[in-house]
Length: 429
Image 1 (cartoon, rainbow, N blue to C red):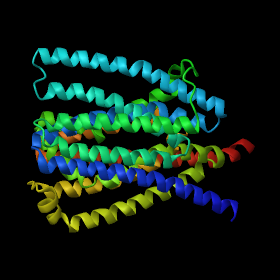
Image 2 (cartoon, rainbow, N blue to C red):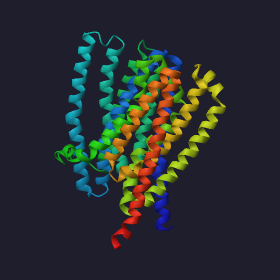
Image 3 (cartoon, one colour):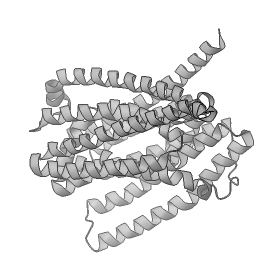
């Protein structure tokens, strides 16, 4: 077998493991949402969606701060350097995150005392803090194993996580506070999975907990812009639901989330391979240059777009049966919301792939500023849309922001590749 074919098979195995892992997580999230929709009130499901969206924000911030410098550096370091880098990042997180969590808990208790939080939201905030700490610990080790290109090890622990969460959430629906119980289940599953992940990494390449002193300060100049970009993008990919809750109601949140749930497999498939795609894009850029990376990302985007269209066509054909039998819910704007979500997710999966060129080039400042513009535009459009059209207006605003975002990324990336192509000509002129 030729070297090129061996590399092709190795890449296919890496990608398939990452896809299967994310497929499991997508299925688990779908099943969890389905269990809660079918067996709890709209308010309880709406509260869970608000909480889980906040957890997703913190996961995104962690990934955006750590993953870019981790992926860029780990491919260039020897074993001792990798050990110090991974250990240093882990030590710094263990130092700061629990302290931040304790501060949030104290604030929540104070708000509960002054009755700003109530008997439903108070406990929910407290368990969410604990769950977030456990989930961030788990996500760190997943990130490192992906950076080492070891998705097979991640897959094994994800299976454990999925089984624990699905069974646990079903049991949680029999409690008097399903949203709180569900978050506790997520915390316990993350603790167990995090232990397995850390042991798997330690067997392969032990980390030096005393290494890389001050690593967070060192990576901050690069990581700050990527983190800002992640926070800004969250404001219109997830943060819109808080605008919906304040403008309309928590029930409106549950309606939007229930229809979005049906598109979750494609959305999570795209975002889930991010931990693997960023190291790959960085490696391709280092070895082959921007033009090759751009062509490969376009192929990935087209492939996911085709999969999304096929999936949505099947979903649309079966929509009556799905809402009547599977969800056991009917909404006044059901078809409009489903169509809007289909187009939004199609644009999103394309954007999620094409953005890796600029990310691998470290152009986080440009991405962050442009994403901020799109986020503000999307939120304003969503607010106006809700006042004019109700629940569907929120998604119209999101779609406007996503379309402008992906068009901007295409233009900026094409200019980047063209500049690289023209550089030798300019230098010899």
